[in-house]
Image (cartoon, rainbow, N blue to C red; front, side):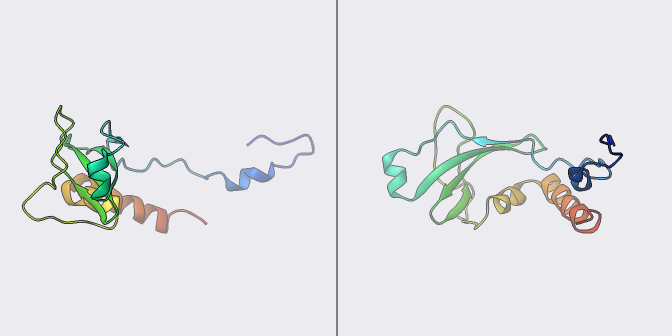
Length: 124
């Protein structure tokens, strides 16, 4: 660490991480979808915005954020937008990360490792 002319370390240096461990990657890509903003008929049904997600396995899907929660819809970054929920059972989840966790096993493992690292190895 660089010292100032008095020989003291800067005050902000105490907040820098002492080791530079890289955390595991959980998601390959997370971005606002090109289908935003929702059309008026979808806004009346509670849709707020759409999120494109690409998992580490390479699967791409669109998550709908609605006034009821988050769900994965049937659109797959194609030319036609299909806002219907994917799968036979319609599940609205309270958090975006919960919907990603259902589809990606790599996400589940890496997110757990990240939480474990942040809880036990970071000096707060």
